[in-house]
Image 1 (cartoon, one colour):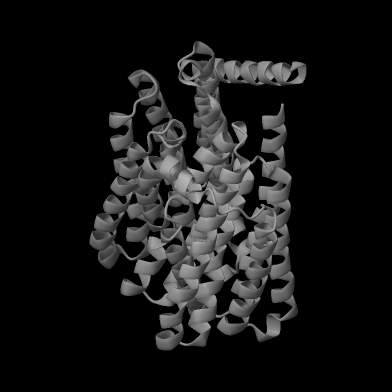
Image 2 (cartoon, one colour; image 1 turned 180 degrees about the horizontal axis):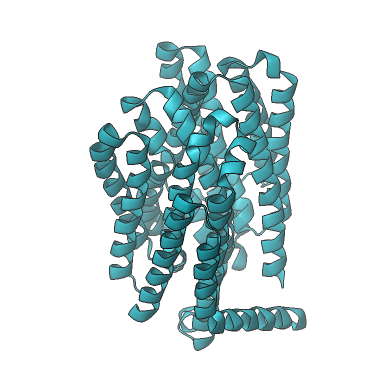
Length: 458
């Protein structure tokens, strides 16, 4: 029952953060010219990218070891694991920002550092999630965004790159201090902690180094071939797509510590297999929900979060969300792999995606522009899915084949709708998928009902 309550609380928080994030995007789209907004996206994503690289694998390590330390009554070790990497991360950010100040000026320095610190915040937020402190995580996340939005609205007529950067830097630093104070400072056990986490951390390090490429490499490469105005257009679609991806990360993040707690015999049990299939189906339909929202209502959503001049982002939004649907083939399997210590596969999966994306981007973007960027996401996701299913098959091959067929049917209906604008065939094809899964849907509901009943009785 606690898992269900945490999941509901997480989604309420994400719904508020999701809304606040697009209110923020709307403010910027209205008050900041398109080319300046593109430069804002470039500098902010550069800070997020650099900060992500220097997370050095610790978010994944936190999710694995913080639950174990608290389970075994080793709170001081957990606190040492939380604080030292976070402090080092902040110091590195300050050092790296100095050359940007010297060569690119004050505006670039402020924006870069403001968004670099977001990654330091991520370390402490990951620690909260690993401690299952969902309420604290939700409140601090929402309050930070709300504060930024209020300050931007107050200064809206005067918005420049510098004022946007100052507001973000000040608010992020205040909330960093708040999160820092939530965990007792303990650094002495670090040597012992590092000995225990070392092997897992090495693989996590390489995995975390690759992760920022997935999130930000497109916004760093687009200005090499296209103007900043095109970057801002693509980022509208990307922000909506990433918002959906973040909500889909919630069940994965909540499930990872639970799997880490389980012993090998529990993971091999029939009961776990049934629950895992139910979880996969839930995740698929949650992803399908977002895809259909963007497909059917994307033309209304894009101007709602920006302005009418960004309506050309709609087809890119649909294609990006379709790649998210393709990733359901391996997303939950990846969570299972890293939660059980198979971090090497996690690393190679990300490496395959990054290499595939870069090669495709370099070939297609000069010829096709933004369409080439979007297609690069699709090619990279398909190659990654193929690699993952070959190396880490969790289900029977026929089950994967059925999932592939479902995704193909969804793609066909999307093409039909976008070219003709007719709902009937789309509804018919989606209904056929639900009918195919009807037995599994009933099983999923039964698993959920039994889980709630067991939680209430415990």
